[in-house]
Image 1: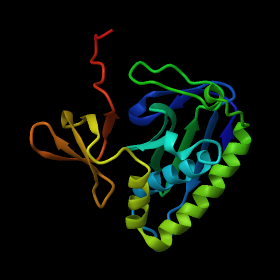
Image 2: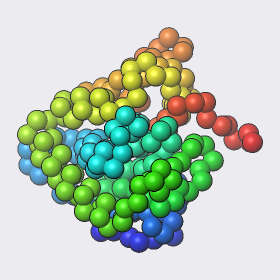
Image 3: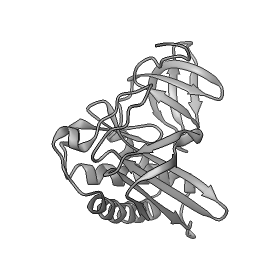
Image 4: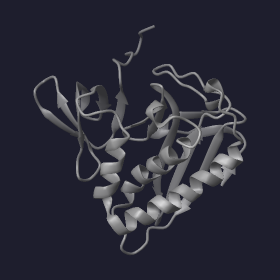
Length: 212
């Protein structure tokens, strides 16, 4: 399913998702199949599929996957992925800034049109759906280890400074890879190895509440 415009979209952790007209907002129901791995791994599968498609329009060196659910272009947020469980099915939502980039208070954003890429959202949706089906098939036969390796090859390098906010608090440290279950591994400035299953990640210190 694809929407031409969203007025009440939702991002991770209940945030409002802004989707100006001309951007891509697509979602689909996924029924886990026998023999497949942990359904939560499908977020990484979707990220790889989206990266595959975007590489058809942009130099791959300009694109970077960011844990847990973003694709960045030249260091700015281009797209996001949301995976939620609803009963016995999963809802996969994908948004891409195609025509315009909504302003966010805590990070830079960019749209494909800003860098001279003009593509119809409907065309992009068809390509993403096809790429996801292909990547899901690879995950089904090869397991998460291959997905994890491919994701890491397209993500911020090990050792990249990161700032994380999670239910356990705020951490600063260096990216240390992904756990076998997809958790973010962070070598903290406090000397501890943090294993983070849910949280927000920044590539520069985030603004705290009350900061301008």
